[in-house]
Length: 126
Image (spheres, rainbow, N blue to C red):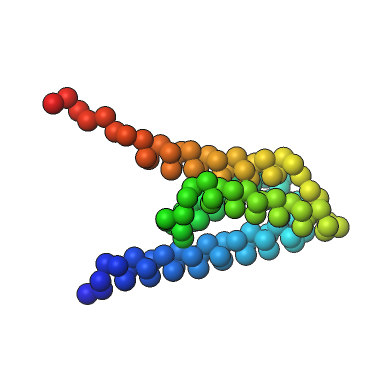
């Protein structure tokens, strides 16, 4: 039987590998020519928002002891990095609205899951 501390460190290593893979996949998707068909089917800002909610969830799993504010700032900077790189690509462009959607997804995750999960719970009558 595995020791729980060992299992915990194995799960963190796997979470970090998955997070790095997600960051790389995000870059590949962001730096290749846009699929016009997909953009016509799904709101682009909703895609940005959803992607960064998932990245925030993965960042928290990968770095469970990191301060939420640090993770949120790093993810927002990652969104900015993507937009800056896109500004240099002939088939992409910088978008403040994309960056806003990215940051909103990060903030949504940390408010909904981090802050609300840490609120003190009222005990029942008794």
